[in-house]
Amino acid sequence: MRILLIRKSLIKQLLLVLLLVAVSVVYTQGYTPGVISVLFNNDRRLPIYSVETEEKKVAISFDAAYGDQYTPQILDILDQYNVKTTFFLVGFWIDKYGDVLEEIHRRGHEIGNHSTTHPQMSKLTVDEIKKELETTGEKIKAVTGKDPILFRPPFGDYNNRVIETAQELGYYCIQWDVDSLDWKEFGVEPVVDRVLKKVNKGSIILFHNNAKYVADFLPIILDRLIKEGYEIVPVSELILKDGYYIDHTGRQRPIN
Image (cartoon, rainbow, N blue to C red; front, side, top):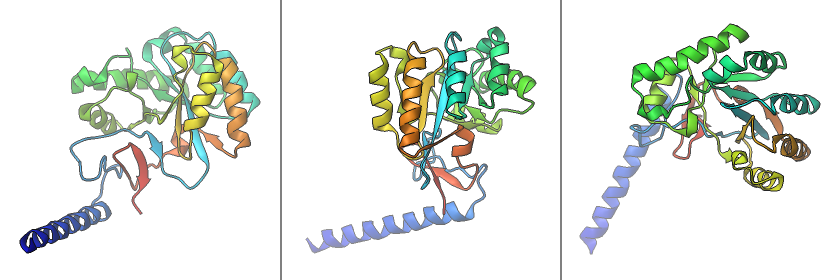
């Protein structure tokens, strides 16, 4: 029994040493762009699902891959509430709705990269991933005059190769921690209830620009969030650009 207790004590001491070494690495190494994907599991890379912040801030995002029927209404509603958001656009959507991209940009919203052909990114090679991002990145830059810095993988599908390649190209990989499930077309109330129950400081909310009831649930959600004291910002204004790590839940946290 005494030997067992000694062994347990030694194990605890070893774990403490490992913890101190890990923390030391976090503080002393120069990461680019300051990212440690998952503490104690550096083999796995995660995108940013949410952000640790003391401020009552959230980001709203819209994925656009198919259709633009409701986009003009979305933009008008956002103007009414003086809210700026992030639109993640697919390359073939831009080809079809280039004038809508211009209008989204003109209204002051952020444009993120959502790939060129909306594939399952984890099945692609490095060169194929680069082509997906670079092709659409050029289309976005042609309108905005700036290289996009945010990338959201289609279907939320990623692996280490996807994240590392995107980071190499200068992108922050973005997921979400509040999925509205608006694409399932359950109606207005289910979306409103789901979003408001799950939202918290630092949340990234996922909507789709062509969700059937978006023009109905969006003003309700905006009104409630604003009344509850939330500031709604584009994704790039919510995330940390450096000096951070991403924990095992995908939450981006400052190192110090």
